[in-house]
Length: 572
Image (cartoon, rainbow, N blue to C red; front, side):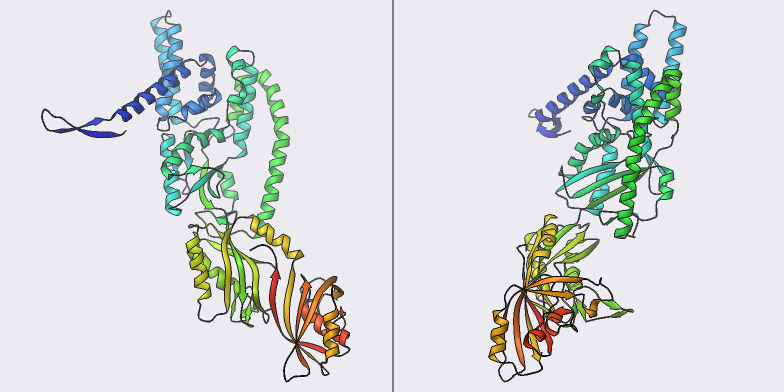
């Protein structure tokens, strides 16, 4: 509550008084609370009693009767106050209606009511199993109970601030076990069967009754926005609350990954294959559960006709323990892209190991990714590029498009920080690798790079030797060839790791640059279709590439050095 200091002119002392704006806020809140109490008072007494007897918590009762939106306006309202409102305004009204009864009957009803209230305050709700009462087991299996939505949201906000001090927005996600969906279905069927013909039920359709998941999000969302100082939207920063049964917790491995990000209590990451298998399995199980849902609901409706609310209690008592809660906050991968240049003939694109021995002195991936990751304070990174060059091939000219996918970045780099990254990479002493046009890209940048990769053209400069003197006619012959089709079988040098296929490729054009003082060496500049094996196009690969420079000139040809001078792609 806001207050301001007002000086008392008569005595000269200062006393805190409530400001006009604060007083207006208090009056508005009191009025809203009165409206809530009136709405609770208007609830059908017999129906509320039914849900009390089933073991439903106050928040579930409010949710089932369409008052969840009103309750969310009071995040600090404790559970005991909600129970008292139901007791006073609903059950109390019932006592008033029956005030003509004997004093003994009143005392009996009062004792019964107190007993019900005690159960509500200390037992787990049979419908939401403690979710809306903010009861859960933490990571150490300790039972935790928060008395209000504000207290629960405060715990979530503190955890977020601890891991990500600065966020500009967030998206709240909630995952619940299937048993919660089952409970939702049977309770809705119960309401439809028992109260379907009553006036209050016809006025309030079941669409007014939001799900447990939506009720939880609604109850804490506004408070989270205030505590975190930012708005909730379709953000790349996710706050995820996952409720699990004890059986699910035991079944799960000690480590999990969501969108490439680790759970806070673990360290290991799933592999891509494991993650895909898990997602496929999960989708299949969910689909099976959905297919069975209608059958279960129909079966429940028939059993309800014969057994009434006792059967409903039996269904709700199948699970009676609070869930475990796993909290995770993470940022979806951010993409930093540009073009890289490789100046060394002893640097691979990615880390290359053969029998635990490193090939080359470094890799483009490690130099660029290792510079970007610390500035983003991420958990890890993945390096993606539009194709690759051999370790002994330089990447010059315009550079090759690439993306660094930073996982769970704790700091989203500004434009100034991006420039700092670029300068840091380009100012390294050994000058093995450089970057240009570095910038943050959305996930569409990945799609653009992959789409253009298959259609791109690449230009090269190759130092070629032939077994006889190179003359002007040879130069004219090569320069005259345009849009030449060639057929390449998988090169012998990569046949051990690639499928034996035949590929048709196009040589768009070639130009020759003579080397002074040498008659058998020349520089060959050429533009080709993506995926053309240039080395094999020069020497023929024992006839596996045809035509080749050797077959065109009628002699033996060898390539001594190769540089990529341009990768023609619109992106980056």
